[in-house]
Each structure stands twice: as C-alpha cells, then as structure tokens.
Image 1: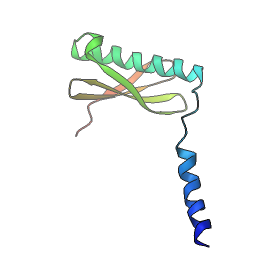
Image 2 (image 1 turned 90 degrees about the vertical axis):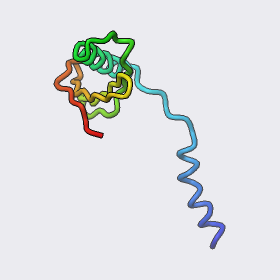
Image 3 (image 1 turned 180 degrees about the horizontal axis):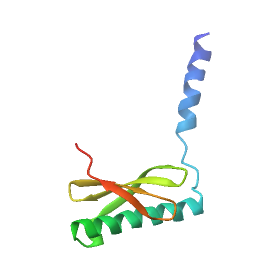
Length: 94
C-alpha cells in the first residue's frame, strides 16, 4: 500500500510543476491599463517621473484591481477599476 500512497502524493506536485497557461490577451490589456493608471496617479502624487515607479497588479476581482506601485522603498497601493480609473490609493503600514 505504501507505493500507491507515494504516487498519490506526487500527482499534485506534478500538476504544479508545469508552466502557467497563456494569459487572456484581453486580461493583459486590462492589466496594462490598470498598472499605467496607478503609475500616473503616483507620479502626480510624488512629483517624480514615471521611470521612478515600478507598478504591478497584485490582485483583481471583477475587473477591480489592487496595483502595487513602488518608488524606491516606498509602497503605494492603488484601487483601479476596469476602465483604468484610480479610485483611491494609500500607503500601507509595514
């Protein structure tokens, strides 16, 4: 019975070891718009050029995303809707 248990335990690991499926191009466009909107809002907020900011979407639900923007070691979180409008941004505490 032990060999069967080993196989059962390896199956989930094998499922996780592949590459991620290709993303939906529409989602990639939405992601890019949301990240760009957050970058623009934080650029205005900190009065620095866009090149000083790195943004990435960290979560998305129903078209509304949270985007993390960093300038140096400072973190900003933007709430961005599906139209690419920044609804709010905040500075989370470490």
